[in-house]
Length: 227
Image (cartoon, rainbow, N blue to C red):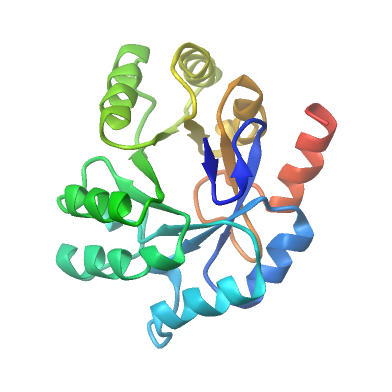
């Protein structure tokens, strides 16, 4: 499978951006793909124009994400508004991320199919790491709906990370697996070695998720471990 022109046959780094200046920074740091976090873009910006401007200056594939507040995002409008914004930028995107538990999920999926773009079905648990059986169930449900399941869980012990990696080895690829939090920080480097298709890094400023490394840190580490 590929996102845009990027084949997901080796671990890829997704640079998370919410400003125009971060596009070039992400490229220079070694990002393979860009995720535009619409929920983090200042409200004064025209969202559609933002996407147009980005694709005019980069050839990197674009993932459109408008993260739900309850799953770690910063969008506080109505669900109809959130989904409408997400659907409005699909023609300028190579992939779209929609939460497994989102009310408007099916509308987004229909639009993704109509635009022939990749769908990432995400599930975030900021309180714990589910059991292996629960994680397998979540991933199976997500795969039935979209192209790439994405599971991000909060790790509170090394055992949690072992469980996540064991599940990563077991299931059909491609998928994205992340252990969040301080203790899960190293999983953002090693999960791709176990089969996670990509890993997310911030470009400037603070991390966009608990334990997230920068794109440059991820690139340096993966270049050593994967080559």
